[in-house]
Image 1 (cartoon, rainbow, N blue to C red):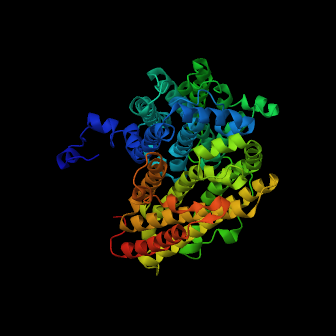
Image 2: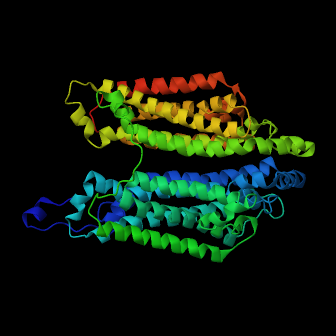
Image 3: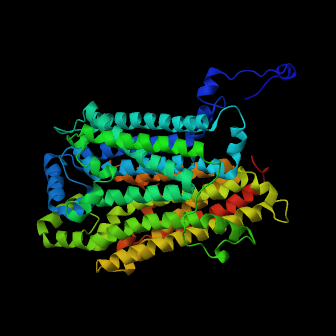
Length: 560
């Protein structure tokens, strides 16, 4: 907000415009909404774009009733172990039913992860670094600050729910080819509303916990419960002992709400909505009643002092990024551990039924479902996109040295710009290496528990780290030009890569289109098949981006 000179001399200020109070700098709500624009674009692309992409691909891959019948047979024959991963198969021979079965929980997890990250830091991060104290001295009040920030998140969530509902309906209307492919408006709305409420329930939990324990523990606990609840609900049928625990989570409450597949349970959404409202309100009250930045420490093992180096850009950058890298490594690694643990069982079920193996091969011709590694390879695409967003957060941390103003202080020492950029970038790459090692170790434990080959899946996990390093290199290069766009560029590359790799084969686009996706050049590392050209490309992007970023920083003013 600005004021004219005559306004300042007369002691009055120009009132904020109506638009600036909605989007801009005229209110806490408007400022929070403006700050969410990147997250909104990313989430709109993920939710709406992926829904359209999947909707367009399914009729292309399964264009006939015979091919749909094969999908139904596969879903029913895989048994309860596979249904614990993919969910209960209902009307999977239709476009909506297939999306609900294979991708239904994925959209909810993506939206919930964003809500957890956004709400856990909405107040806790600013309170910790002291920026809220400047806002709190204005005649606003802590409650108003919290409510307006929360209202901005809810606004974005409502718009995303609308986008997802329209995308689901439009995907079926535009690409559906067989009877039953149409998705009614009510079904699309029911699914999108479920995704939004699930995201707000877990995001509200993170929001409340962050006021007590800080952003990291709040987000970590909420994220862990998100995945644990999903896994327990999936295996509640095959492992009855988990059913009682699953019923305590939103996943269990809404287990029978499958609107895209034609089954609805609208009443099950009420407890989820109530839980979200209570948790969000509790987060506001906790913020109002506590001192700014005051948190309760959770006793946890501390990193050794040597890991938190402050004697140079590499050590300090590595120390700053290490907690984030460990969190992503443990999260992705635990998912890989569970999948590796059940992969042998699923592969054996497929191998014992020749007809099932043939059906599986006809649907996924490039994968050997009779091996544990082949089954894990099917899940790598999901892990690539998660690791991609891990790279986004690590690059954002690297760029924050400049965007937060800290770099100006660092450069007052005998440290040149290019040296800082490249050496601190090396610290990020080392953190990615640690993240990859954690993931590989957990996947190896899962494979060992299943009695499967350990070496190939563990080594195959290294491809995730190489991909993350390549994305980080792209972020370094973009950050060298302008630090504020580093994370944005990486996020755009992650989304574009996922969409190209998903759509190009399904829509039978020219091969050169598919080759634009870096993940198309990784081979099948979970079964020991590596594409060395892709590995070299990852290394070139990582190292080349580091060098380009350093050279670019040297040729511009800091903060521009």
